[in-house]
Length: 196
Image (tube, rainbow, N blue to C red; front, side):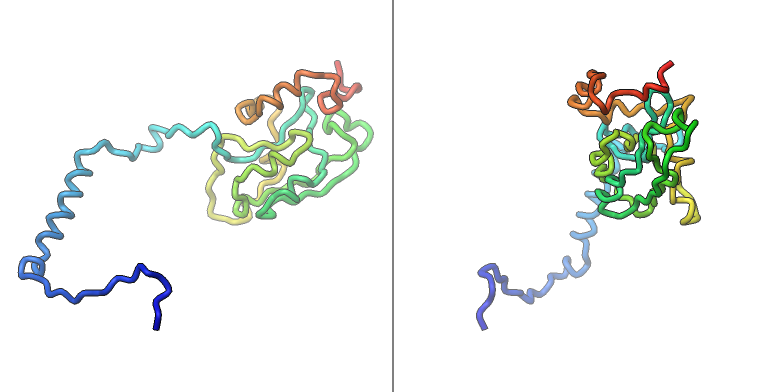
């Protein structure tokens, strides 16, 4: 039978010498590697006291942003859910009622918005797909838990707090910052009824 590749290697049944049968060279080689690592700088950190620096492109827990007046940006268009390769995002759209103009930016909003953090792969495609810049991945780490249901994050955990908003300016591109400087664009216009 002909071999599939030309890289075949003939196995040799070579008899081991007496010293090789004692495994002393192998043990000495292993000890040499261990001693080399013993004198190197340690790569571990004492976690609670010290925290490792994250890269600027780190993608952590999601946040649903608000506009400058505190109204939710999300319009429940569903583009983030469609873009999600893990199918981790689900939402239910609802119509804004009279008197809720200060709560929701558009006529349609997400009455239910959930992300299953166990399914999420933190790829950032939801962030890229959102036309309203409503969802961002922050530098926060998702909390641990023992119950699976606690990893389904609803609007109570996702919506940006009004008093202490999360800064996502590091996640914005230069083109986005330039686009936001033009108030005449429809995307940047605030609801006229909300202006003070």
